[in-house]
Image (tube, rainbow, N blue to C red; front, side, top):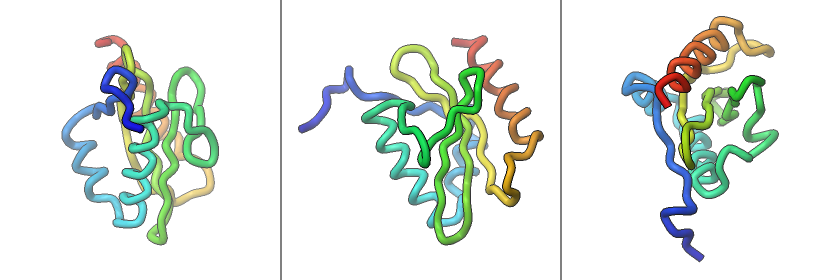
Length: 115
């Protein structure tokens, strides 16, 4: 069954640089990212663990993984049925680095101010 356009979610990106970074993710991580984005287009941001995690204050992380490693893409909800991708990185430590969180929070604040 196909969903009508009014029931589907749209994915937006903070900027073109972020789109390039996501396109340049290792193939396994990138493939899982696109699979998760397809799910988000149908179901919105409610993917939950292990696919997505709430980081607090309206910030979420998408958790794509592949043989090449683990990626993270931070996102927030825009107006209507819009999800805004804010920041991505390849995870190299057990905990999310504070610098990466700061970037995502600053971008979310900017995006929410423009919504």
